Image 1 (tube, rainbow, N blue to C red):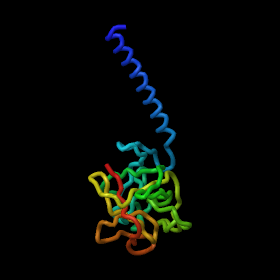
Image 2 (image 1 turned 120 degrees about the vertical axis):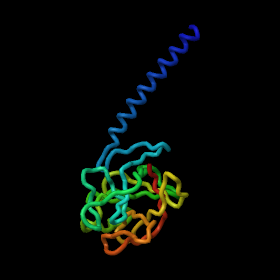
Image 3 (image 1 turned 60 degrees about the vertical axis):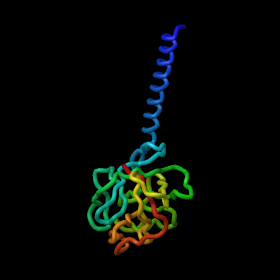
Image 4 (image 1 turned 30 degrees about the vertical axis):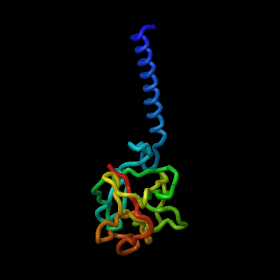
Length: 188
C-alpha cells in the first residue's frame, strides 16, 4: 500500500469510529431522561442538568424546564432571573461536594433530602423528591462560571441565594435562615 492508500484507510476507519460514538452518545442521552429533565455532559465531563434558575421573589433555586414555574413561597409561580445553572448529579460526594439535593415535584425547588423530614414546601407539608441526586460543590473559589453564596435554609431545607441583604421568602415564614456550606454553583 502506498501513502495515499494508507491515509484513506485511516480516515475511513476514523470516520466509522466517530459515527459509532455519536450514535452511542445519542442513545445514552435518551436513556438518561427522567422526571426533572435530561442530564447533559458539561465541558468538564461531569453530568449536569441545566435550566435551574434563581427566583427573584423567594430567592430559591428552582427548575425552569416546564411550561409553568412551580410554586413560590412569595405567591403564585417562581419568577426567574440571572444565570442558567448547570447542576452536577449522580456523581460521588467528596469533601467539597454534598449529595442528597433533590428536585421537589410540588414547588420545583431544589431542597436537601438528607434528613428524615423533607423540609417545608410552599405548597404545604414536606417537599416531594424526584429525579436526579444532585451533588453541589461547596467551599471552593467562585469563578466566572460558578456563583457562590448559595446556602441551605434550616427552616424549609431549600437552596437559596444568600448574596443580598434581604434573605428572600421562606415558606416557613419570614426570610430564609442560612446554615452549613457556602455552595458554589456552576452556570452558563
